Length: 187
Image (cartoon, rainbow, N blue to C red):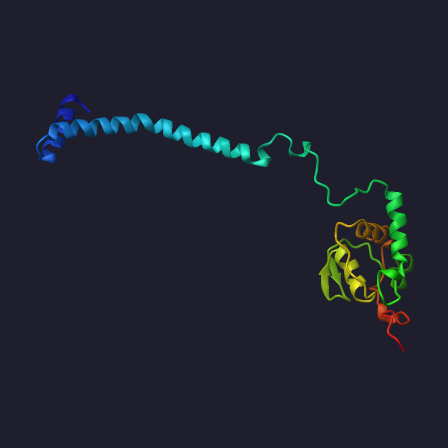
């Protein structure tokens, strides 16, 4: 603005107040605008500072979030895969996992009818799409009449490892009802 325009604006503002002391109100307004213009950069910078503080609370902002000791999913970690497979084979043949007198090996001796297709997949007997752990628990609950295993248990890991290691490229769906009295029904 040219100096004359500023003077015109000032006198217009003073006239617009049309009250006694209009000159001092104009000065106060001028000071308020100047203060806001000076404070605005500080306000903006402060909001960015809050963003930095929020990033410090964000675990993804840490340089290496995996540097801390991990929280275990079970009491003792599994480190020996050979022992895990031995445990898996023992459980696979264990008729005490259920009350029907059947074991995993009753329907799947040596991995018979276990397909290598990746999980989750449709399991006809369950009429559902299941993960490997869910499939194992389905068999424990139904043909074997047992209790499900917790997903992070060593037993579940051992059975899943054994099932995967013994799965074949081909194979049909297992039918435990075709096995001689698979559900332990008394005749």
